[in-house]
Length: 218
Image (cartoon, rainbow, N blue to C red):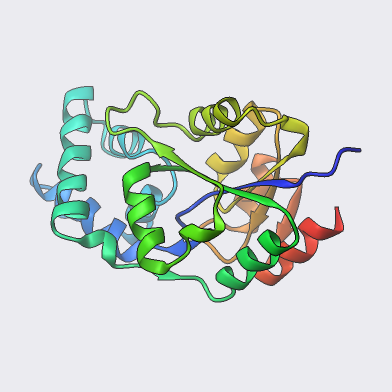
């Protein structure tokens, strides 16, 4: 069996806890439509999946309205600096350093737009650990986790057999599986064991330290 020495990391809920800025921006976008959302369980559905899909599916929006909602979200996230409202999970930098020092190739494959990811990684001084950083496009032509993963593979000429995806939500699992990649699910993020196992996640880890252990044990 070929060793999986290329690790694709999700971003929100896997590297950083960015929930405060995401939730603030979702509420800002909904206010544009006169919606004052107070249900935390609904707001939480926006953490992980593509924004366009979340607005369309949770509020039955037309394509035009969902596009507008995404634009208003990004207005608050970028221009009002909501993206600055995040923290790096405890143990994540140690996880990244340990894996890089051990010779693993680390990449980001996220449904968040690439410029946002890079800005946040730079702020947290974590960019140095990643060989390649890839996210969604602003024009929604590349918005799904599956599409981001596929592009990351193609651009770099990676062998799928050597890749392991690490993420915290169902879309990380399904996106990886659509590309023929195994997944390690983390339980310290926004998803839970039931969600990840139902999606077909092969391996689970409770902490960043356990992520390192399970990757090195393969």
